[in-house]
Every structure is written in C-alpha cells, then in structure tokens.
Length: 292
Length: 275
Image (cartoon, rainbow over all chains, first blue to last red; front, side, top):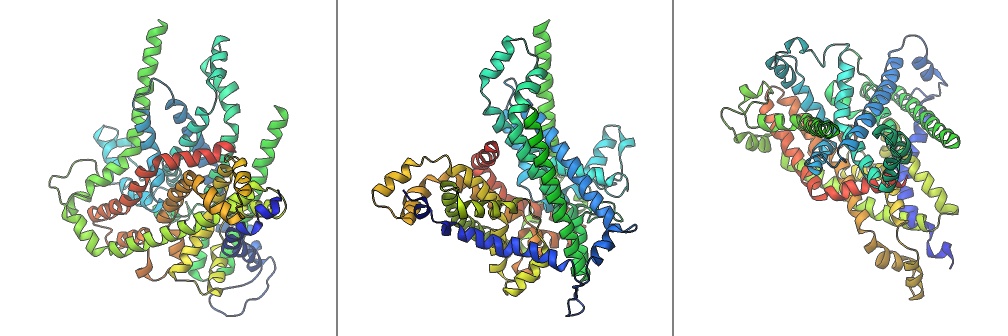
C-alpha cells in the first residue's frame, strides 16, 4: 500500500499553517526586529545592529537582574515541584494511605485554577496585617514568624516560588503516579526477596524506570518557568522594586512604554535561553544513558 | 517490634498526606468562606466562618462585574479554539503517526518545537495587525488554537500509535479513500484522546490571561479572567465581592475538571509516560 497516498501530508497542513503563522513567524520576525529601533513613537524602523543586546548585557542593566531572576525561578521551581511531586506520588501510591484518590484530586486541583486567581488569592492570604497566614501564626503562638511575605525584599521571591510550587506539584504527582503504576510489581517482589530496602528499591528500580517521565516533566517545567508571566504579574507585578521581575514582565513593561524593539529583544534572549537549556538537558540525558 | 514500627510508619504516612492535602485546600476554603462575609469582615481574609451569611454578594458581583458577558466571551473563545485544535490536530496526528517519513516527519518536529518556543508577543502583535485580527474575537480564537497545537499534537501522536494499522488496511480493502478512512474509521477510535484534548485545552484557554491583556483592548470582548482582574482593580477593598467573583470564575472550570478528571489524568499521563 502506498503510504504517501493513504496518509497524505496535507492532512497536517491545517495544524502546520496555524502554527507557522501565529507562533513560528512571530518568533522569527521577533528576532529580526530585535536588531532595529522599532517603537511606538516613530513610523520608521531602522536597523541598529546589536545595540539592544548591548543595552541588556553591558553595565549594571536591570535587564540582567530579570534574566537572573527568570533562571533562578525556573531552576528552583522545577526542583521543588519535582521533589514534592515525586514524594507525594510515592506516598499516595502506598497501600496503607486512606482516601488516596480523594487526596490526589485535592492536590491536583490547584492546577485547574488560573494563575491570575492564584495570584489574587495568595495576595489576600499573605497580607501582612489582615491575611490568613499571619493571623494563623499569631493564633497558634508563632506570631514571631509573621512576616511581610510579599513586600519584604528578601522574602518575596522565595514566597512567589513557593506559591508556584503549591500550584504545580500536583501535576508532577499525577504524571509520576501514572508512571509508577506502569512499573511491573514483579521487579519489587524480586528485590524484596533479595532483601532490598525501600531506598535501594527507589534508587535501583523506581527512579531508573521513571526516567523518561521525569525528563518529560522537567522539560515542561523548565519551559514553563522560563516563560512565566501570569503568576508574577498578578502576585507582585515584578515588585517590590524589581525584586521579582522576570523576562516576560519586563517585556510587558517595555511593550506598555512603547519600546517595542527592546521588548522583542528581551523575548529573543528568552528564546535563546530556552534553546540553550533544552539542548543542555537533552545532551546530559543522552550521556547518562550511555553510562548506564 | 517490627510490627509496631510498621504501624507507626503507616500512621505518620497518613498524617503527612492529610496535612499536605489540607495545606493545598485551605486557600480555596478561605476564598469560599469569605465570599459570604460582609465587606468589613472579609477585610480580614481569615478562615473563621461568617457571623452573618451574605448571599447577596453573588448577586452584586454578577450585576456589577459584567460576569454574564465575560462568561459568554470566555466560553466562546474556549469552545471555538478547542474545536479548531481538535480537528486540525486529529488529522495531523493521524497521518504523521502512520507515515513517519519525508514531509510528515518534518512537519511533526516543526510543530512540536512550539512546545518549547516562547511566544514573542511584540512581533505577534505586528503579525496580527498585518492580518487585521488584533482586537477581534476571531483573532484571539485563532491565536489560542495556534499556541495550543504543539502540545496537543504531541499527546495525540502517541495515542494514534496505539491504534492497530490492520484497521486501516481492512478499511482500504473495503474501498475507503484517505478522508473516509479518517472520518469514518479513525475519528471514532480517537474519542479518548479527543476528550483529553478538549478538557486540557478548554482549561488552558479559559484560564489564560496574557493574550487578552495584549490583544483585546475592548472590555466588552474580555473573557472572565480579565474581567476578574478588572473587578479586583475596582473593588480592591471589598474582598467579599472579589472572593465571590473568583468563585464564580472557578465554578465552570471546576465543573469541567470534575467531569473530565479521568480524561485529564489519563491524557496527561498517556502523553508523558510514552516519553
């Protein structure tokens, strides 16, 4: 049977065309515009070479801070979500846990809320004088721990990352549970007969077999983390000062100010960081496979 | 000795899991409780029950928050873009997964590269202007469809591989043309993944907040997320109303979640476990 005739490529053309026009083309155009002085105030667009990139990477520009924040946010939230998600998945697949399914549903549920809603809810709960968290700490006699969670320069970024972990860990948990259930119980039975401990089983059976799943969720988390916007915009809007500013909040700021070339340059830098990180992740995974 | 240790371990395990579930659910409970309080009482967003249950908060919000029109907008955007996604992705996944050579192979990698690609909003504005679809409903629908295609295709591709090829052969022997094979034979078999995509993409579009912020400057066209943000700006000091507003925004998506739970979890895991 002729595969070309039976499975004609034009069946894929709808998806390809939409993707090309509204994702790929803007991506390429954006890189082109990053070499110009495009803005809202003049109609002319002039080529300026690497000027925008220089403005980002030289001196003590605030953009470097945003890039640093973006990378920090990505690394910390990816690690926290994976660790908590994995631990929860291991816990909520144990036979002795009561009401597993219900608890899984609860822990997954923040995933269905929009980041905007999450941001607003936590903004109210973390309010220094009237919020739930400080109120609760005072009631149980730990008033000393009450803090200005979202306005203290040193606390605000960890707070934001914790909220993001609260939202995202359920997703990892669900995916890992599915992975765990697909591992044949025979491996564990054999290991038990050999007298393996819980941690030995975890290290030698569970984690290696979960590797493809973990690679997938890591890639998804990393690309999400680098592109984060909604969460930070609604929770802190990049503040106080620029303590929680990330690349995409900076893009939005430049866009609002009419500095379109700077906005698109920041987006392009983000694009290159995503590319580089993915390359790095995929390479390091390949190497490990060779060693094993 | 071993037995007691085991029992203690089990008890601790249960306590830990219940504690984490509580931590996760508390924000929602706080929100729910405060949506029934008076303005003065809700100023303190605490877990205590309202001294007086104010059900009118909800009526006030529906009237003042323009929730009906933003609900309809959000519903329109989510439904239309999801229908587009399901149609183009199902067709693409079918041919690409069946014949993984030549143009098909190229198109697959081309499209799924979008999973990682950040959206360049500034340049996208230029492209949308060129097509005259900025600030239009059709524009935002096509945009949502486009940005959700890569991940959807990735999930659907894995699913098509689980459908045996012998089915295609039998259909062809019976005289099916490619499109007949797809519509009459394959689409019915794709139901589980179509449900998954429907639920996942519906939630993604319904919850999105960035696209309208950039590409819809007319408040009459705003979906619910943006209406909530606007409402928050106007009623920042009336947390009872903001809470009620948020609960009403959450309701539809919670409903979709509860009804489609098995598909969400199934789809998420099917796509990822295949790796």
